[in-house]
Image (cartoon, rainbow over all chains, first blue to last red; front, side, top):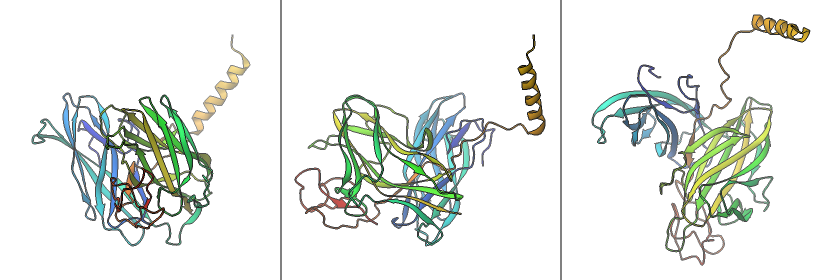
Length: 304
Length: 77
């Protein structure tokens, strides 16, 4: 629930105020998830006050335990993406579950977060589906275990000196052996962006989801020196951004998307449509480097 | 001078306004909020290729130094 008299705003969509925030749902598939499940969330924070404010984000729901995050100073009239890694966790439910959490944005006038000026809350629905409960049709499974790329391609979106090490089914990091899909590329410019993508035709059923089990990385040298940082992951349907994880590009030596870690992303898709589904990454390079993407057990599922 | 085509356009446009409500700009079809979930709560370790993961990295099970960064391991819940 929002209060328009409060000059701060928190959103889950890419739509700016004053256009009303449309309903948004966090989707996940419980199959092969750990227990407890750990959720991360990217939000947009707006400051319409006349002064800069220090923003803090947390959330609450009886089934979940949430962390609190200090997002730092946001100047007057500005907005920002803010990504909260492992923001919340809950016991893995045994069956499909839909619940609503309240995400709270609090604005302070001091860097110590002691003088509270504004509080803004907004609800978001979490739907935890269970794709093996018998109600779903599995329309596509790409496990790459036949040793092929199963219709996936890749693109170097921008950056200089980009080149391909390989793009193939590979064995180094997998969820279902023996293969996952692996892109190994390289570049020398900053920023750089790349993607993996596939042309998808969805079934004519009301509920269609894509499930990405994906892993991103940038190289390290022998001494462990980081040579680049992951800033922003997007899932795109053609040019439409369905999901935005991380933050806008900057030159700070911080990752805003998990490195060297399998994560799951679930997006709802339109029915009976053909489009390109893409997983995109923007990165900050600090030296000549390798970039990596892995994908395994990608699924399209649907039900009436 | 008013051309016939302009008159036709006017008629069609007026009829359109009479028959339909005026809507706000359409909201893009995207109900998904931006989130992701961990897949590494526990490691399903299975030998493949003779060694596990490199020494560093979340959830890595370090057994012996791999000869390169191409060490293999499996993340599994």
